[in-house]
Length: 319
Image (cartoon, rainbow, N blue to C red; front, side, top):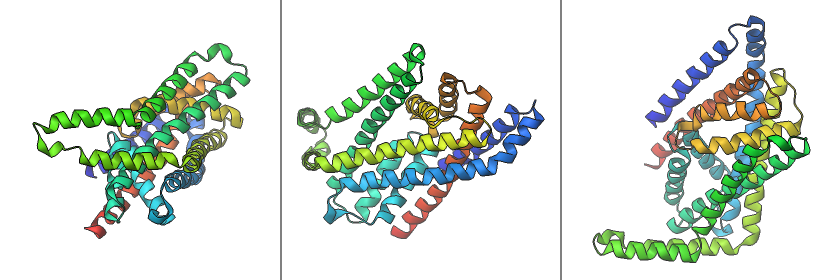
């Protein structure tokens, strides 16, 4: 928690310094960016809210009706996870573990909480692959086929990641893990794989509900699309209007690059570089793309800091 708060303050300071330094030689440009900053930040926050709603719905769709908490609770837990993702190293993993623990403390069976958390991350990767492919198809439709090499690599990496996550949840993979734990348990008895049996049963039950899997994947895809809406609004407000198709290309390619920095808080610096590189594919000037990236970073910091504070209060209430 303290590390996340410290990271948020540091990243916020760097974002502000970056905006000023980036436009320091062009006072008129700096004035334009600073004048547009409040509106751009408000647009970023407003367009991001549906992303949280979509990801909350994606998680809710996987839970059996009898075990579903209210949507308000799911929304808060998703907010906490995003706060970790933005401000804590390996935040997606840490945040998911934290909210899974909170769900167990709320009364959800541990195997179901762990199963939906694992499956949720998997479907998020599957939907990102779909989003990347949509972005690639859009990029090719815009007539940039000769520059699509990096896009093809990104799509392949995203597809491989999604495939690996799905494969690791199949019975043969879980059976292999069980045999490994059985061998280790001969030396360390606490590693008895009984919990794995319950986890496997939960995962396989969740896999049987194809409708829930499809709804969850579509909800995640809707969240990725709202990221493109955010990029579209940011570039318009700071003075470089693009079409939605171009914003979709920037967002889909940038997210693939960003995923490489998952160990860093909010993929610091990697996200900014990803947006600049993605913007360059369709002719957005580096300074303009970086301004948009820094405004998004500011939004992430605000959402993340408030989320960490809310998470801490939630933990205190349940203690």
